[in-house]
Length: 455
Image (cartoon, rainbow, N blue to C red; front, side):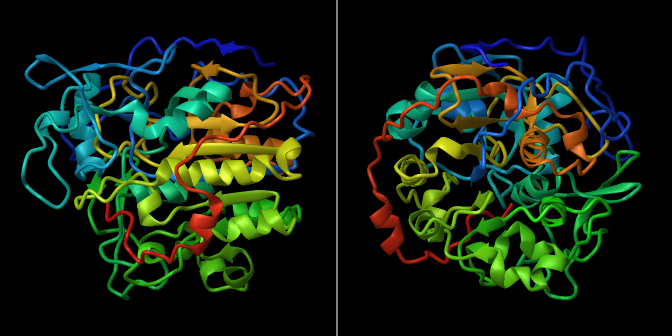
């Protein structure tokens, strides 16, 4: 099933709000990962035409921040301050200051479902109030590549991050669907020191949320993990489905050292797949496309200048060109007719969004909306999907496509992104996405060594 415009599902009658545990103002919790009452369209057609799924993960942008004015999408150009005053969102450059985006900030921004606490949050690693700064949207002319992809293929305007937290747990959610470490605790926020994984100093701790709603800062385990449910790596390996995680070079003080998701998975970081399945630098994906060695499933993590992450030094962001160059490389190759490309941003980055999370669980989620673009020859042009998705929706599509079974985390409750596709249509011819940089630029660019995120 796929139509020109995927109709929205009805939201829950009311959001659960209130206090829980030690977190005054935190969302109330419901049984972990119970199916959402209105989720479950799933796939109505087989996905046999898809042989490759490429997940491009960008940084720290809410839906309203990138697509506030996109025609037909659920965007907003005004926002509510905590005082109750409605103010216009300022048009802003893509490069911007870094606003806090951890669990405490999520609770503040959310404000019991009123979505009016963004002006009470702070700039990252600072006590300075952000004030009206989070109330902004990016000038569309600076992200034209994203808008062109959304216009030519599909934009989802109700994709929610799995947890109301930052990049460490977001990237874990994109390989595991959740950060459950035992029957009563889930990881939240960042480890106490870097690198975020098995190479961290021995004293490093994680923070956790309990099923009773308590936030336990630095009371969690060392960040070298074996999840009870495993990760997508386990499902893929069990079915002999090829995969790679393309990422910047792994250095303790650099980009890869702060978050390569599999650096925190003990079986990968301390096993042979670290050499065979973790591919650095991230530009290796171009060589694999050219050499006909693209795996069935790919995660692609950008270097700092291409990440869309707010940069205090206002370095020009090359994220749109980076994404367009990867899409163009696939579109111009023999892989085009068998590939689904998913572009998603890992968390809201502290920027304003007007839609409250429609579902609350006891693992820190759902978080706020982030953009998702789906590019494939089987996506009807101009699709705007209003379906409620979460990161588990992407994992569910991977599971369905390759017959992997289920992790049994958020993928179990999530609606698959498969309802965006129309596999009955003939594959569409690819039209290159205009970009300011080519693949050759990124192939020859030296790794920055700069951390993309510290929260």
